View 1 (cartoon, one colour):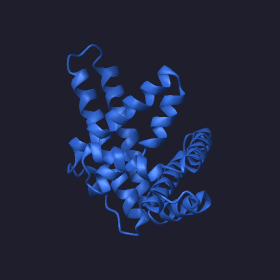
View 2: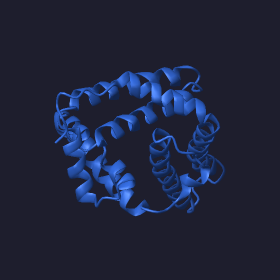
View 3: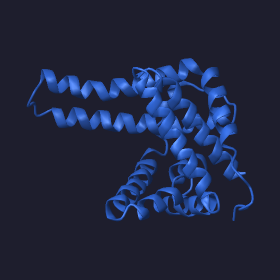
View 4: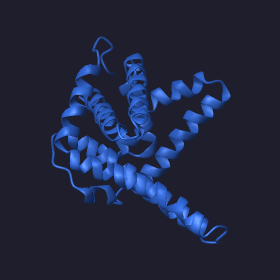
Length: 203
């Protein structure tokens, strides 16, 4: 069980996020470009081929690509925190993709399902199991074990992590308000910072 008297350093997390983002700025700019591109192409396809039977297929393909890039983003933010070199190719590794998707879907069902019920259960489950996908990628745990380990890691640190959630939301909203360009910086900074907190809890 994590020590409850140990405090997570949110300032150190953001500092680690900034250092990694500034060091690998080209990588994160490319990542942001890919995410925007994969979201934009299905919309453009619908404009030019309105009513096409292929529209759901195209949208499904790019949803899968976004999920694959998200998996790669988890992998590369972990490497950023561990001060290892990054490569764009890592965003497209399919290793653990199936397990990652199932874990992510289960987490989202619990989180948003709980929010739709009474709000509090969603926040509770969202906090408790927030690192399940990270554990699947980083530790290669089974789906059930990843949820159990996430609950163990988070115990005693819920308020620190909730505070970081609020910081992430605030910074990324500010990034969007800066003509949408600022989020290219705020998103990787906050994501790497979040991974830094994950690493602190793993230790």
